[in-house]
Length: 217
Image (tube, rainbow, N blue to C red; front, top):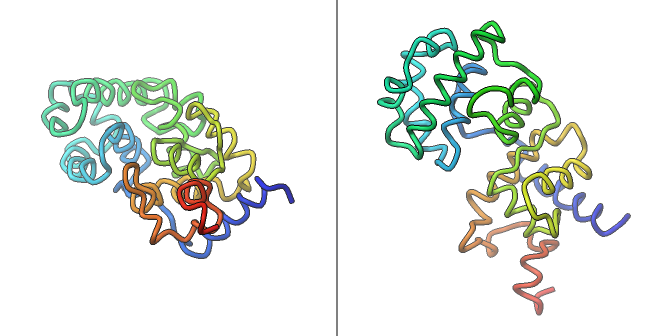
């Protein structure tokens, strides 16, 4: 087995044993609710999004309902998060597009999802993976950082390169869960400024840890 395949095998094995359940921390009840939450989560914490979505989705629970709202009305619900002006416009436009082109239902293909206002590749991948269990790898800052540090995507210069490397080596049926493994590990253990290496079970084969602690290897 090549070194990179061994690294993926070790990493996946550790996560399967230590994080058998890995799911999004965004709260949602419907595909539309998740789409709203993911659009709101751009450069914003899931915790903050979860504080906002209950009231917004209580009053506008469907694409049909939200399509009737103006960006100015939506803004009042989401003004405490990052970039509320843009996101309120995106949500209003997204809801109208769903009604006009998809009968109010969240589509399942990336091409269709990315045709919606406020939906880029990362958001489309999240919806495809979480709602439709497709082998899509959404790469946010946590995934990008953790995959690089471990050594899974050494040299990747952008999220697309990271995504392509990860889906090449991760078994297809595990890709949706692996997305959450990496996000949650980055959120709670492999922090950006001060990674908690002392409490991380990946250190025996982590490239970052090896470089920081050469005498311990």
